[in-house]
Image (cartoon, rainbow over all chains, first blue to last red; front, side):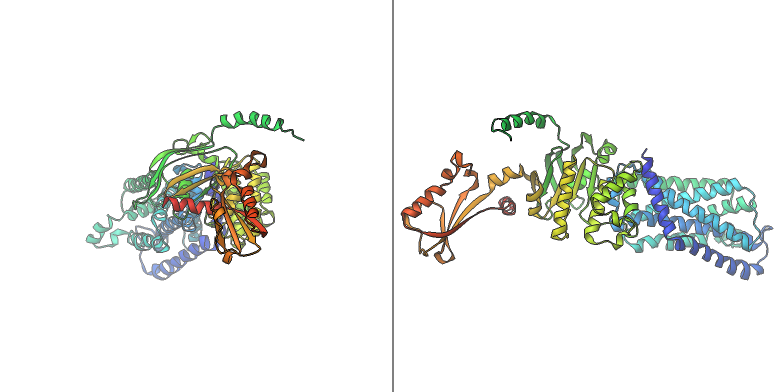
Length: 253
Length: 337
């Protein structure tokens, strides 16, 4: 294994995040704080507790998940798209690195960034609402699995995209709507029966539900189902990435 | 001082050495057809000798970059195989690629990175442990040391080209591919680049370069390969190529203009130019050897001058011109059309 290469890619990507600290960390923290102010403080005071949890506290796992998904996808997609766009990908393709090592470098860096961000948002949330984490191990496991899975998805989008428009297309048209409709801001019990059934087809629901369970022990679907869904999604992403490298799709003519 | 006897003996001692050293790059029956159906390379066979500067010449779209891209791993071959320093570029890609450095044609770089960071990144990517002393040596040899903390976006085109060379040299490759290394570089910088390339060759690196500047190949290459329409037309020692294919011409500036070439000179390939003020004699450079070997006799210059004298044709000046590599290249490509 070319560990020097993995380290080079990883540190290079992390250095990019450090260079763009303002947009990497500060802006997601500010937007999450705004969510707390608007949904938690302004609207939340008029919403009753949900299964014994105040609405402000109920929001925290959903908001962290929202940021985790969007940041993982955007970090990883940009990380691999940018060398394609500038042409510097030639170096990656001509280097003695395996595809696995390339993925570990890029996805590892993107996942690290979103994990750190998730923890920062968690700490920020502590300023707004009283927090408790019932199952810390599961909380971290869900955090890591989600960050890795959606960084893989971002990596795939970055390879697939042949322009900046496409790079934004999936996050804007797929990820954000699914997250908003996946129980980030509400429990599906609050929906009419028809929409409850529809929501069960939204994969993000399982991630948010499992993650919220790790905080408060309450969930929309069983924890086992949440874990199964995220592992299934991880498997699908790994299969697609492996196919991309096997065929050289959008990388090698 | 070397005596006349010693020199051939030394050459003979060296000859067997050259023949036993295996080529550093072997290309066998290599073909590439793109998804569009474009047949970019057709059954290429090529061997690059260890330690030489090999220039690959060809018009736009001839297949130069495709050939380099396949060897370096950027493009998949449709057929055939390539060995780099004895390692298959597909099955032994780690070994093969760690020996290769590539300087691409386009000035691609991470605009917001510093020179030091981007060159160090390349070394790590190619599986080498950090070695600041080596990076320092490379940057100094390319006069980039003063710019090491500059962001790439602030550098001139020539400097960016040097950074690409530094990146390619960061992992100490044995084989260096330079795809149009001096494209868009001013004359002074181009000469500096040539000096850098020569120094690299002297340090044992095999250089394969593609170029549009025939002057570049003429100046630097040990051997030349010409590629056109995806086929290697020829591979030849540069000197041999110029000797074989180069034609020479002798121009005599006459004291008195001629209307026609006199009958007694009809045996020579002569033509009149500049309104009869110049008499041009074409002859084959191939026939020109050392004076001792009677080269001038074979080319007929002495006989021509004697016949001119006998015919009472006087001249005030003369000059000779040998066809350049560019002219040879153009005629080769035309022949194949």
